[in-house]
Every structure is written in C-alpha cells, then in structure tokens.
Image (cartoon, rainbow, N blue to C red; front, side, top):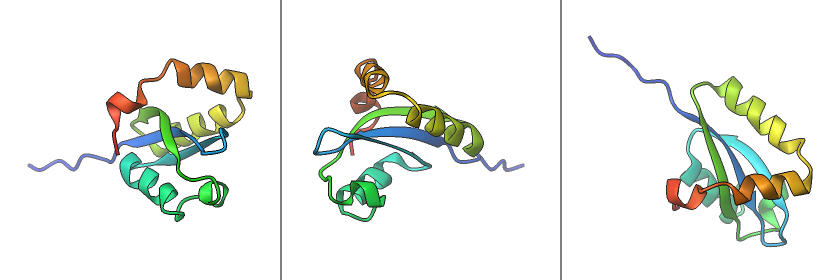
Length: 95
C-alpha cells in the first residue's frame, strides 16, 4: 500500500533591501525566495530586491500556515524584529 504524503506548508518572513519585512505562505520556500528575488514574487517585493529569508515556520496544513501568516502580518515592526532575531532560517533553508 502506497501512502501519499501531503505537502508541507510554510509561513515565512523576508527582509527586503529597504529593511522592510514581507510575510508570505508557500509549499516550497526555496523556490518562492528565488521568485521574489527574480521580481516574480509578490508585487510588494518587486522593487525591494534582493530579499533575505529571515524566518520560516512549518505546518501540516495550508490553513494553519495561512493563519500563522496572518498572525505575523498583524505584529508590530518591533514584534517582527524579535521574531526574526529568535529565528534560525538560514540553517533551515539556504536558497
């Protein structure tokens, strides 16, 4: 019997070249960061490249990842900075 593993879902935070943060959701973090850097990502990041992946969280469901994405977007700048400081995104993903 073959079991199909459902994809892993991620909420992620990028630091843009202007110092701002962008939060998103994806099933493939490395691909998504490449898209942002190439100008094919979100409209917000197009004029703010290069971007740096500074935080990643993994979830088993799309809804959980998107809920966390929303929660991160509601954080103040200072709260996002604290979240990023406690993160080790570079160790988890090095696109």
